[in-house]
Length: 159
Length: 91
Image (cartoon, rainbow over all chains, first blue to last red):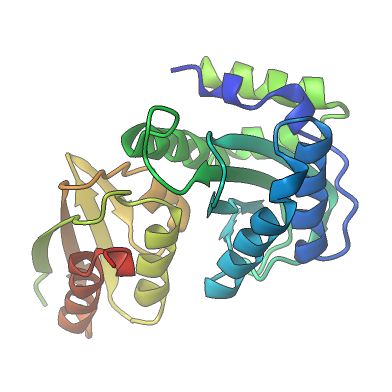
């Protein structure tokens, strides 16, 4: 599967500027709304899900990566975003390191034609495999444009 | 000291996604024993969320929990109970 295609260029950014992880999640949510991927009507529900998820436990999975991954009531299909915070952000990550790479996954509450749990696991597997790749992380932190970022995903998918 | 090994089925529909991986890793990190989780011929360090996510274990998959160390038995039991409970996602 070419999972990199799920990360539309306009859903990604190399320029997160938020000063806290809560603000970063808001910045990513607003990016998805501006890109037309997420309905503005779901902004509140999306932020609530993302922030509640962080309260359960930080999504900072280590190696400078966070994977906020939540169900959003009212969403009819999964949305994927990759965002880079060049300066790094405190995320209470498992290894206490700052987070530079944020894979955000919003998914519908229920399984259906637009959401298959097994395929979803495969996507998470792909994200985890990429995240463990030091080359991917190093290049992702250095790219200047979102097109280069998605190009990196494509390139790493071919390996 | 021998390994403590237990197999347990994944009952929750979403399988071993990110949050369950985090829950396993949190338990593992609170114990001295090392633990590896296996599924379908692949093994991961139980303390690493990213490694656990690579297991890609769906609902009904069987996880093999293998721990080694002074509190290995307790660690295996705690992880097994978490999995058997569907990571709290069954209600």
